[in-house]
Image 1 (cartoon, helix red, strand yellow):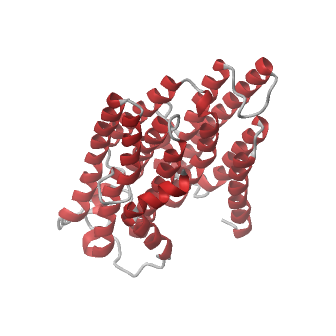
Image 2 (spheres, one colour):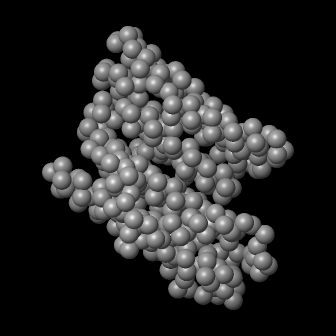
Image 3 (cartoon, helix red, strand yellow):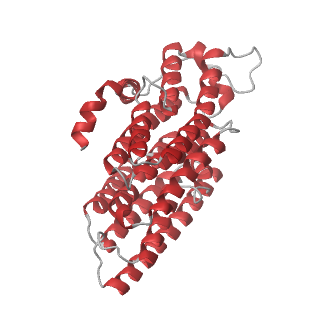
Length: 348
């Protein structure tokens, strides 16, 4: 892609998200989301591959549907209350419609069906942008409107997403689909706590972005998109294979890794709010998710590739990719748990 065009698209991505962050008016927030969608569409279709074009079309249609719902809901709210302010969402119909549209935007269950399919058709870097940056603007709107939304709707969305994210990933062999279901599960954890402690949602979002970035950048370095090619990584790059196994366990939420921090704090807060059944359900859904991370770890570190591989054996040449972002994200994904008191103090 032409570097000037790429620069314009990336700056538009930044502009769209910043516009949504800064706006207190529904039309401006909607405009930011639209700029975001239109900026990432060419990035998704840049390889001119039928799968990429199909994924771009699916993504565009779902995002356009969600944007139309947001516009309709904001008009309904303005009609009923005479207010365009984001914080004045007093109409229950409009608030439910908003939440449904924003859930469709970020891929919460049961509006998640587009997410694995779209991610599967993209290359790893665009997939990384879709899984991390594209979640920021809708989540900012959800945090602002969460207090006006029916609590049982948020709880249902959270539990369903955590369950679907765990179950959907169990039978997958494509790594991008596994990461898509992982994203759905993490979004569920963020939504379940948003009405009680929004700062924990921010912490969970931060750790999710760090761990997902580490996972995507690792797969990009190893040029791997399927599970059976993971078995060849140990002989190719043993250090990266072992740190990747730890990153995957961090995504699963095992102590003493970074991924344990948000789960621990969220379960603690749910217990404080006298919701032991919801807390137990969320802990059990984390176990389902942990199974497929363990499966990936097993494939990567405990199996040696057989003499006849089902995949093309990659050349064992030195990579020309920059390893600084990868090393930074991996270090953060493994060692931030001792910083929990500092992070809590900074966010509360």
